[in-house]
Image (cartoon, rainbow, N blue to C red; front, side):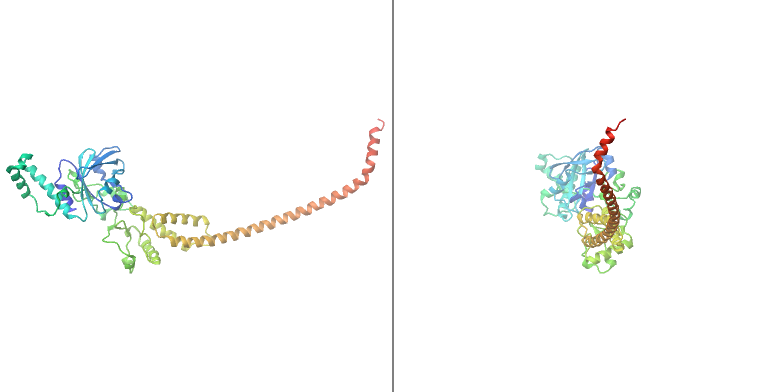
Length: 407
């Protein structure tokens, strides 16, 4: 950052510039680049538009600027991949036109490039102070004298730097104050106007920005701190050694102590961090929610009873499978839940079968009564038919007598 700021100080002060520190969400998977809102309101278009990025070699890239979300989307991925931008790199965006940034890159592990870039910018600044130099002057003594005078104003540089690397410089970084942001209350963050360390060269915005909750996916929050290095779970000997590390940030403080303790015990049961293989670039708030819900489901599984509804088990299973799809190690919870669902289903089936048997017996009793009624009807009709059979032989004669009888 010190090198990036020094480079920024050598850019044209008439044109605004910002420094951006590359986080995982900027250079992997999501490839989303968020700008400070006040910078965008002051200098960038108010509507969605295409913004040009020009690298140090003059190559042009078109990117989609989303005004409402104050960031670059489509096109930024190609720029990032082409330039092999890594997490920790620092980029300087110099707004040379209303919709065009000149982009300089400071590599996290390449100080020689930065030395060279600083040298080139200082050389350019020194020459400008000496007045214009045309090609004939450079070829002649006057040009050499002016170049010598300019070089004397420069700090020493590494002579091994190649000329073609001299134009590589930095982009912008928001040096966010991690101690004053709250994940649970992003509106409070906006009120705090988190101070940044000399990120711009223009007016009052150079030392004050409002932190927006959308920025970096709310990855900088109260109590969250940068992790010095990744920790293997085998190195965790007790709860005091236990930190929840996501995207290079320790987010343990976003969980209450009781939840941290429960999550620690869950991790101990599997001898690994359950979140160790989460997809890169996930929003910290989402991760905290996943951890909390995983703990809640684990508690609910422990407290569940045979009388719990299968619907509640199904909801837990669906939730855990969604977390598993994002990389959470919840297979052991799904396995336990599957066993409980199997036993619960057996219990529910026993209850259903018992009830069905009772209903079947009642129906059989009803059918037996109906059968007796039918048998009585059959017997009654049998007696009646026998009587009618005896009389049926004389019915025709009687019928004719009645029909032909005198009026």
